[in-house]
Amino acid sequence: MKLDVDFDPVLFRKGYLLNFDALWLVKAKLNNWVIVWSSIMILLGAITAYTGNTVGYLIVGISLILLISSVRFLLQYLSLKKRYAQGIEKEIEAYTQPGRKPIVWEFNADSFSYRDHKMELTYTYSALQGHRVVQDVIFIDVSKERYISYSLSKKQLGEANFTKIAELLSKKIP
Image (cartoon, rainbow, N blue to C red):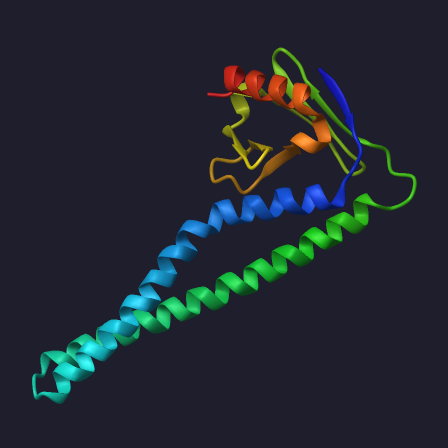
């Protein structure tokens, strides 16, 4: 099945931000819980230390270390998300230059091909690490860590093609 897909910046941005969130959201939510609990433990440790118990100082110290490392992670996450969004915008500018050909997706019996203005790649299905469907977007994962993914939206493909591709990938990619 060969598909010529016109570039849609809104769907491109949505797909890549969904992929970013899928990679980072679990750690970010856990980090938020660590910030909340370490703040609570600092208060409890301070109360315990105020009553004269030296264990309170230990609790405050450990909680401060957790709080500082969690805040550093949060700042790193926000910085990385901002740089990732800037990278997406640069890619959108490159894709929307006048005279660009449509993106070509080809799903054969034994391989998957992708062609745009920068590259032409072909993968056998056994070389791909997996696929996911998140909020009507199919992600085809190239690397084990899901850092490199191709995304196709139901709006780009239409309902029938989206279903066909999802079924094909379910059969071909383990």
